[in-house]
Image (cartoon, rainbow, N blue to C red; front, side, top):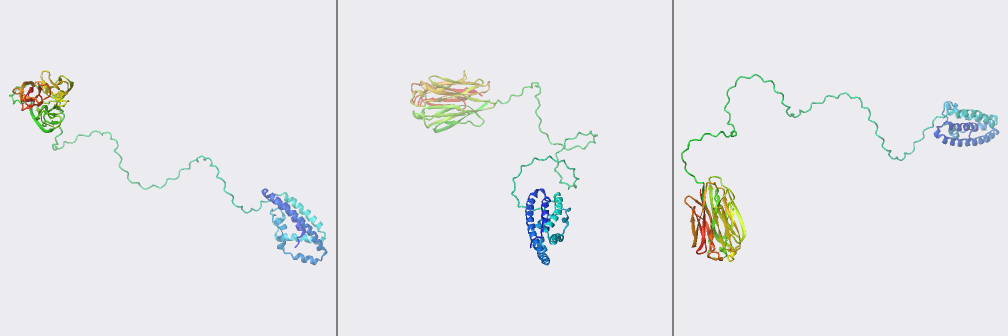
Length: 477
């Protein structure tokens, strides 16, 4: 089928106006399509002119028959007419209100004009001139926005923008209505007592009540201050005289002696002691080593090895508080050394510790210790020449009214001797001094120096008969 030239020319004039009706952002694309449409229109006009001439030369019946043959739908769907009329949407344009049927009628009018006049060119020019005025009017008008195209594919997600600054805090809204009353809570724990209130006004005294039961005896009160001294009373009858102290002697024996100690009875205080050797020959087991006070007991040792001895301790139970102490002095060399009691203390006994214990060496020979009551001290010496020894004094702070004396006696070639105390006196200690000092031998070896009974002191030097002086310390308790 060939297109109808007159109407297509009109459509070509309208096509440029369609571009002006599009939104500005799509006018470039519409303008391009309009140019293509115009080029198509001019091509159609040329074809229509040639076709119309052929139709004029042919029979009318042939023309009508050909005109009736094209189907209207096919003619309307022609790209040229569709692109032109489908874009006309403004109300001011006459063809805005055209129906499809009207549009077809216009097209057939153009064709009939070409058939009647036989001069399609003039008819088209006249029609196009009239249509051109309409086009000019339409071009001055802004077309409505075009149809919205289909949504394109979703683009890639862009990077997250920077976090904006925090906006200002909004104004507080009005206070809402009070909510419903909640359930009563559990009872809380009892709080601490409050501060004591101010005492109220004292009320009137009530009636006297019945006498209550006797209360418990209260605690004893603090003793009051001493009152003034009263007048001396009459002398009472003379009572029984009690001694200042009661004394005893305890002994401990050993046949395999090292250091032997003897303790006093409970409640007794050590005042002296002594030792007896049971050696039967002059040898290393017979050498004198020690007889002395130590702490609250007496200490003994005989023989440079396991000797045989008896160790003695003299102790008293005082009826008044009495304290005792030991005083020690040392010496290395020839001569005598003294251990003195401090002020307020009375010498009670003494002792000796020999540091040189080779029985054949003259520097280990026994000389002895003794009590010097006048000067309240104990003297000692050991070694027939240059010895090494300690001297001990046992001192007690007995009452000053207590009388103490020293008794001594020299025994020549004696098998042993005893020195007794005066009547009414108690022995507390003593000493012995050997007078044979040429060289260590059986005649000058130590044999005994210890308390005997309650009022005597026994001494002996030499395995047989010796020469010595025996000392006894006696106190009247």
